[in-house]
Image (tube, rainbow, N blue to C red; front, side, top):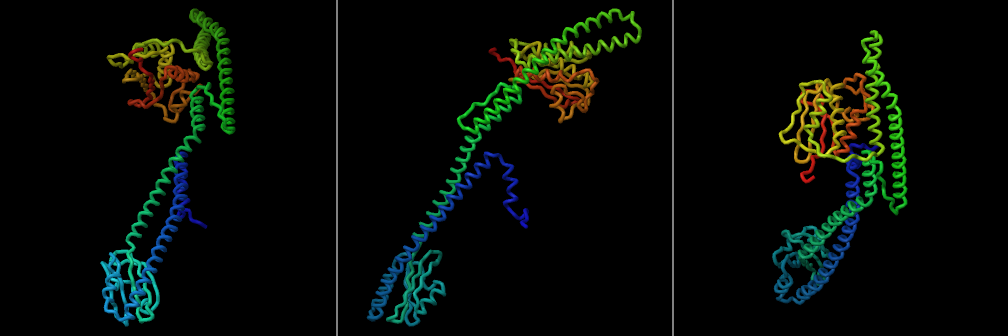
Length: 470
């Protein structure tokens, strides 16, 4: 059984799997390209080096054979010019000759000493056997060729320099290595290019799905010529179209229901108002019932108004013309109309930020946040308006226990009620904060929840400032 801890492939698998898909494709292309080019480079190296080395060895053996015959002839004739002959044969740079005659060693050479050759090679030559060996003498690569001289009972050794061949091998190896590296880089680039082209439909699908998730159900994918991609685009477009129709149908239904409820609801509110005018004539039990009726009709009216406004936005109602709004003035107005605490002061800069906004919707969003803090967060403790070079920021701090991070997105969903850490007195239907999200989104802004420095929740709104030229 293979131990995964000792298997490097299994250890690397989770690491590779955690990399982005594009990077994995680039690594795969680069690895395959480097592997193929590396295989070709090794084969090229083996063929070229073997061929050049064989050619050099054959040339050296032929030359040594010719020189050995000259030395053998000189020894046989008893010529006195043997020393000059050996000197001439070993005059080439980094070459040498060695003559073994009746146990005596006679050497001649330039920069290298043939007597430093490996002992095993010299023993073969001394025994009258032909031999050749590549080695190094004083760091110089050489080829030693030993030939017997049977007519005179001697042996001849000649050393040939291989420095140029060694340089050629080094140059060839570096060129092949650089070729492998360049092939890996090109493979990575091809992998990147292929990934971008192959994942372009997926990128478009992701962008379209993100737009649909943000509420833009009108987004559609272009149908390409590829059969598989065309099927994906058609499926997505059909799904988005059906979802858009269903949302529009639900929005129309909610709007129709809200419109139908407004008339009887108005009658109930007016009837409750008439009964409140005659409150003194009612018994205690009737007053309690009237209070309950008034509270529930007020809550019901708020629910119908919120539901009608949300349904209008979902149905794609055209946005009204935006106007230039003094944000500090609007926040002060919403605070006075909504909060029951007169001590809440709006902290604002001297230079009041101006925004282009739908005054009614923006005031409604701010009022809903204030109302949420009053009913669920123990009341407001601080309201501030700030701005930078591009955005205006509204901060509303409450004195409640705060909202857990895991619940901060959920509270902006429709009909979200009773989240942990927040008091719920049953007075809301869970549409107020959802309406805030829609209204702020219309202004290209954002709303979220943070921790207040005093320990409660901080509700934050950010919207773009009005441009100087607009």
